[in-house]
Amino acid sequence: MRKSLILVAGVVATPASAGTLTVTVPRLSVAEYHKPYVAAWIEPAAGGAARTLAVWYDVKKKGNEPGTKWLADLRTWWRKGGRSLNLAADGVSGATRAPGAYRIPLPADLRPGAYVVHVEAARESGGRELVSVPLSVPVRDASAAGRSELGAVSVTVR
Image: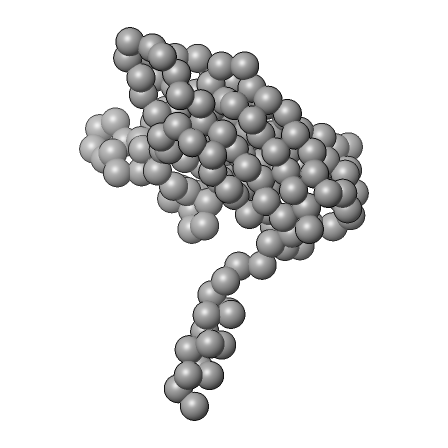
């Protein structure tokens, strides 16, 4: 009986996903490197409410200048709804990431239609970049690439 309870708990704890957004943070050869703040969100292509998928920032920084202070540097995300998001948001907030590729689950309740997935990065002593990927659900995949602060950004829909 106990084994089946553990199995059920494992199934319930695993979030359902309609697919995956993969974001690449490139390795930059600069004198002073800081991990970027990154926000990822999806919105209907025809306009409508933005849905934040992930926000990576200095979640441990507290005091007079908490890590949330510089989230406004992610200007497009901030205007689209970041300023009204209660942070730290469970399942959305996370620490900044070192160079590498990272997977973010897409919402399981993503309905068929046209969307745009946006990923924005801003780095202290660095630049700011926004990469947008048009997406039609259902579809297998879509991708775009950044030029400086972001690398490849791809979406795979199940």
